[in-house]
Image (tube, rainbow, N blue to C red; front, side):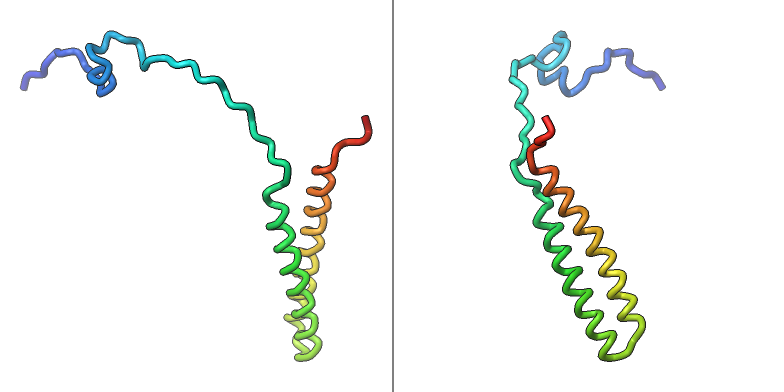
Length: 103
């Protein structure tokens, strides 16, 4: 079997014409400045999760006392710990959104 020794070309070579150009045509597009959101987009997510954790804690506590089931009280403690972590996240988001007054 005999192989051809023709030069290899790419699709870009055929699109540009003869393939003698070094690359695609250069255009001068100014870089866009980074967009800094005025509000944290995850703030509402943290608040929804916090409300759900607090409601779940209250419901698990009430159901655990009413039914006398220890597993529901364990669930209430776990949801309470998750709520405390979410409170910390929410307070950190609020602190980051305020301007720095120490300067």
